[in-house]
Length: 249
Image (tube, rainbow, N blue to C red; front, top):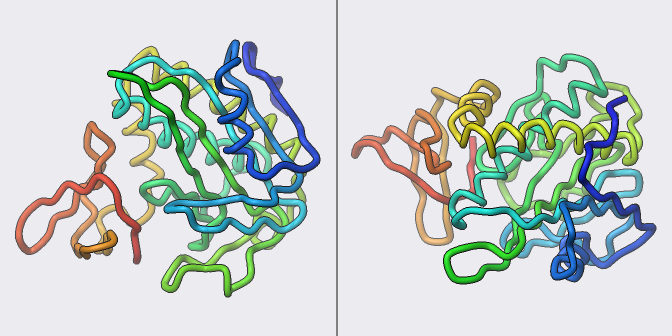
C-alpha cells in the first residue's frame, strides 16, 4: 500500500450532496490540494450535467486544488487523473491487460467503462481560481441499464472483472499517490510526457471511432491526441482536431 502523498489533505465523509459541490464550498479557504471522498452522494453528476448514480461500495471523490497557469493548460489535468486511475488499478489488482484509457475522460476494463473523470473550475481574468477533479469508479457494482445514455459503453466493476474486492479507502490512497507522481511530472516537464504515457494506454488508437457533440458527428481514424489535448481524427475530408465530444466505438 502506498503512503499518503505529502502536502495533500484528505477528508472522508459519510454522506454529501456531491463531492464536487463540497469541493467548491471548500475552495475559497484551501491552503493546499485536498481529496474529498464520500461513501454516499445524494446528487452526484457526470458530464453535461447527467445524473451519476453510485451503488454502495463504489468510489466517489474529488481532488480540489489551486493550480497555476492558463485555463487550457489547467484542463490537461484530466489526462493526469486518467493516468493516476490506471496506475491505481494496476497497483491494487496487478498488471491488468484489459485496462485502457478512453478519450476524453474514461477508464475502460475489458471493453467496459470502469471509471469516469469530470473537471469543474472557477476562473478569474487570465487564470483559474480553483480546479476540481471529480472521479467515480465502479469498485463493487455497476449502474443499472436505465441510467445509461443510449449507445454508451456498458459499465463494469473492478470486482466483476478481476474478482478482487477493493475498498474506497484503499483505492483513494493508491490514487492519491499516483496522482501526485504525475502531477509533479506535469508541473516539471509539461504535457508532452503525460501525452505520451496516455497514448501508450489509449483505447482504439489507430481504429475508426465516432465523435459526437450536441450538433455534429465525425467519423474517422483515431490518430493521436495533440499538444492541447484535442482528439485528432483522420477523416475522408482530412485531419480534424476535436476539443470536446462523446466517443463511440
